[in-house]
Image (cartoon, rainbow, N blue to C red; front, side, top):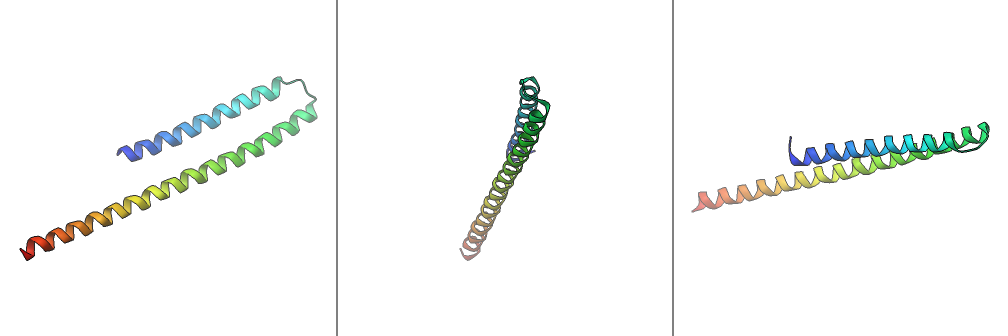
Length: 94
């Protein structure tokens, strides 16, 4: 596994643990807060929607960053191939 793939795996793993911790903490705080059942259910519903949106946004950001890294990698490969071709032409021409 390359360093880049390992970094992406670590990022995804860290995001997953962060989200799991946030959900556990939020759930504990809601259940321990002195509110009526109706208010607690509404709060849980609101926080669940906010969490869903946050996860979606984070997923999009990770996807966009990954796409950028792939595009940069492709550009590097294209540049290296171009340099290789130039070098080969120079050697054949000499």
